[in-house]
Image (tube, rainbow, N blue to C red; front, top):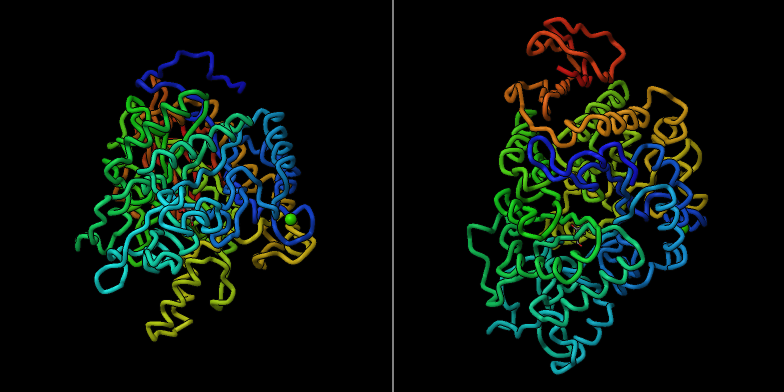
Length: 566
Ligand code: GLC
Ligand code: CA
């Protein structure tokens, strides 16, 4: 990777080791929804290959591809049937190789999704495993006898609102699945399972992929006595299932056996993980993961049942401050505000009213790209894409939604309007609607009929319009990425929140050596005044055209971002 920074010393002024994956910006692609090249309504690898220049021009250096493996798609590829095959809907292995070559030819890197807490129930290991109690693959999964009353072995629940155990008729035993019934959990206690995982990782690394995003990796180790869940965890089961007794041992083994032999990056999805536990996963002296996705920000507006509630800016700010305090120079973090499991950031933390959408998207992208940690941009956020206005349960694809609705009906509740109203704030399908490329039919995503309905606002919000408009979110993000690259303080700098209690402004500094940058974000429609510390500074970047005074008082226009060198 060619980079201004690489010739500088290995350790920054404040003690961080310099790494390419700390300095890069990542772009997440959900292949199903990115670009369809053959008119079948489903995104595919050739579709992505045709858009690499679009991504490269944004200034992104790493692409994360959500699962592209052979899968019956119970959970859109997060249920893998064959780890060494490409999902037929997405193309062939030759298409993957061509995509990887195209990424490398542009000086970018590619990381893929490692989904090894569970497989599909159609994976050969499982079809063998369920056959008989003495099948050689039996112990690849967790099987237990029914409880005395014939029910499941314990009271664990699955993330997709079912029991975590399903009875299998062939042998009269239950198998464990923390997600859907079609996603049986692998048994990491079995050394053969671990060896299989190391082998499939090497298969992709030897092809040249640059690392992994690791799906729900904290769940891989379970308490083998399988007790009932303690009452104190009933409203936060993920914290009970995560960080099990041998998790660190398994991740360290993965590091020794596989990761240490390659120059790659790893980012774990830290479901159910507290900040204290995060430090243990990412402290570079422990040889586990480079970084994790912490859930605090994307859970800011949820209660333990997944119901939406309102939030205030100081709560968001305190999450960043807590992270900065808990993670020292030996640790590294990530920043993300949208992924394939969340609603759209502009509808959630910004203001998606047409009058404010672009401006608030710029504020959010400024936050994303100037906070501590490697930033992950989710496809379409660089256009300020918004949530979809769902009206009926039948419009959703997500298995989590379908299972939850069935559960509601079983419980005799059938208030579809309030169920959908909550999903309009929380659903994962908001980020899965097709990417909006043009104002044409299906937003230019497909010439056929898209697998999930596109947002009707593609006429106004699309990549072609953004590329034609110098004031677009896309060009603003591009300028921000360039600014981040030019100012190591934005990457490695220490963090201080200057106004933690302010309800409308988020103002913080990043300091490295003798450079201090002030980032002033107005999270409201109001003009808000702010006194610049020291009374002077040079504006490096402003999202709003309105002139600002850089005397003592800065007048920050509604939903605006300013980056000022003090
Ligand atoms: C992760 C993925 C999510 C998936 C789940 C089960 O949370 O991000 O999309 O449903 O794991 O694999
Ligand atoms: Ca296709």
